[in-house]
View 1 (tube, rainbow, N blue to C red):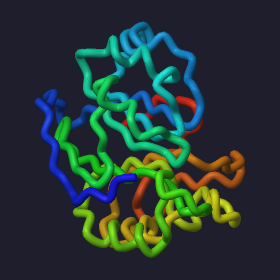
View 2 (view 1 turned 90 degrees about the vertical axis):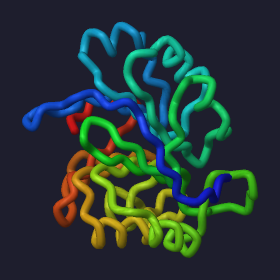
View 3 (view 1 turned 180 degrees about the vertical axis):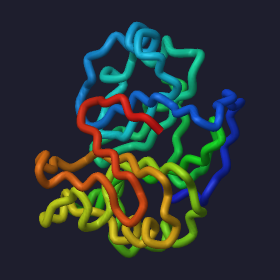
Length: 206
């Protein structure tokens, strides 16, 4: 589990016009079973985002994607080791700029068992980390904020610190996985932030 301080990562940015949007292939929690090269080409994908609870085998085809960036965070069931070999930038507690937008990321979930190697944080630990995280346009997280697409049981409870972060900094978009909200319970907007929930994979416009 990483407690690294906030880092800044740069990428050679594509020029997006004022009215343009990015098409992002977002993957979370289950193998997408995609031919990544064909899918990226056919859907004109600009950015790949992984949200965790995935394995190297689930994502192996990303090795063949060389011409667009790939960013991600680890989930609580992850090994925490597959991103470098797939060319994915680990965005946990880091910011990254692309297409005129600043992205940030946070890994793991609320700690629900005593395993020092698991990618989990107590509510207090996560709140301290979010308190020093700078404002971003797009936040990618494995776990949602408390009270937004989460559940009462602690394993799928959202982060208090992320909820406070949204209240304080109002990012344009939050993208998350981890939980299993029903369609009629899905929260899609909170206090000016668009909420994008992903299970398995989705193409999300940003």
